[in-house]
Image (cartoon, rainbow, N blue to C red; front, side, top):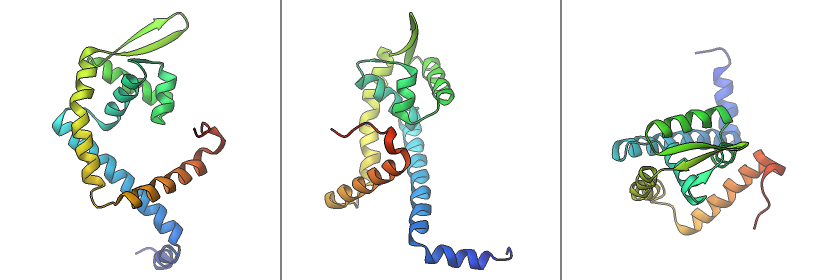
Length: 159
């Protein structure tokens, strides 16, 4: 055991906010891994690929890479890699329109998104199975506070 590690454990035990943050961070990772494993096993795509397809479909079947990056909260080079993987799987195509690149969902991509939706709902139902409607509302409010703390003024105004 490292010198001072007992004191660190004590400090963590005493700090409710730190404990909550560590638990939140840990649970977020577990939920994402659970979703990835389930989606890969059932449909063959990752959670972020499913979310990307969803944003493209909901946006009318086409989106710019910069907008997709914002929607997914990812840096541009990670989005480029994601788009390359979606293109390799023939789920999207890209086309240059004068100054811009557009990502377009293919028929296959739309079919995969539709096929994946019930699996995504299963995942949500499993993860949230013992959370009441009232607790879900509280959780949503708390997560919005955390988002506001991180993003601050960069968030779009609420409707």
